[in-house]
Image 1 (spheres, rainbow, N blue to C red):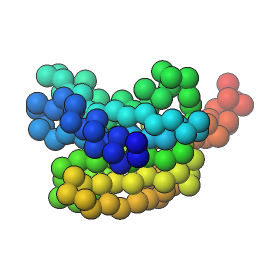
Image 2: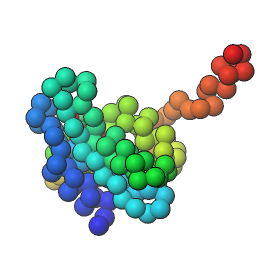
Image 3: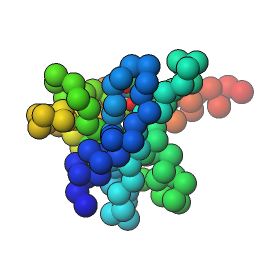
Length: 134
Ligand code: THU
């Protein structure tokens, strides 16, 4: 199954009764395996989780911690951009040149690297001084 097929398929299972905005995400892990996730909302709105977070959790639960490619799809007028938190979550397991394809269910696609989506990302290196002065 392709990354786009996996994202489109898992989107059907999204639990989004509050926003009515279903999102599907699929990622390819370093092994080549594909993991997917959908958004899971909650009546306590901030407790909801994004599709990207679900896909990342599935990958880590399966024992993998590197991702090489991401695909996100929603029924949006323009290809759906990951929220800020998800950009940081993807960067944790991806690389600056990791390709992230954003799509609409109507078939529009646009693609960015993770570095383009999250310029100046916070990284472990930013904590080095704090460690030194502790
Ligand atoms: N959402 C995602 O799952 N991923 C994105 O990239 C953008 C937003 C979800 C969160 C919430 O359930 C709904 O879309 C509306 O914000």
